[in-house]
Length: 282
Ligand code: SAM
Image (cartoon, rainbow, N blue to C red; front, top):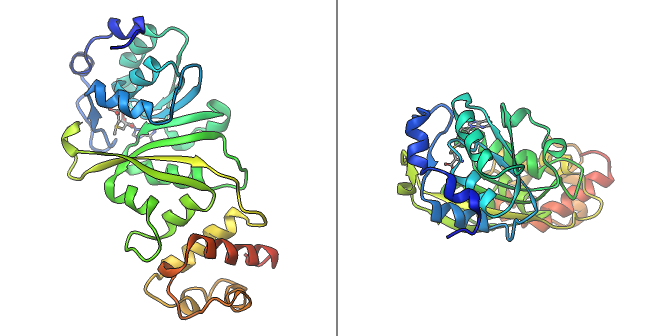
């Protein structure tokens, strides 16, 4: 039970959904979570949020939103579906001064200005989830505007984020998520926890930034991993031949060009990217 007076004033989420006619839209990736205990557990993953800034993408009817507000966060939330705005107003009124809602597409928001520095917590719409993650993990500015990312993905995507070399799930997403961040799979979530239930299982990933290795440009690493995993079954001498300086870098570093991308550790990718960055070819 929450000590916050706002919690008691809000009607159950099912009532909010019915009253505001929020039938789930597949096109907007809408699968709502209505179990408030589960939502509180997700909101607890980043650690204590009292007085902390938080940023949510896709609040929908506001289940995770109210859990974050109950935890004491100062929250900025971006929602594309206009139908949800009245419901979110109601949620905000129960937690005066804690919630600001931006209507629009999260891909068009400059979060560093609107929300940073903040803990990002979101049950992401499937159609834009990976694009947002790649954007948040990328860029040359580091540490980033976000303090941590707590994000719901399809289980299969979550497994790609934390994958280790040699596994089928290891690829570009694993390297981008691990070279200067620490991702962990925080919680698996059964499909029956969502309304409507999606076809697949989900999982919450928690990511914190770590110091960036010196001498490596993010753009170089992104080009390197795109080339290497673009043809993941091929040997590096083949997959990297179109990337200027890459084969020479492998040679200088003593990395066997007959290896495949999925056998290279994150550290080895970083070393190759550093060599390319130094040679100004990457
Ligand atoms: N947070 C709610 C929950 O946990 O029950 C809803 C999560 S639902 C999976 C995804 C939400 O993202 C929906 O409310 C949908 O309208 C919203 N959405 C979809 N695309 C969006 C976009 N490009 N920008 C912002 N919100 C978006």
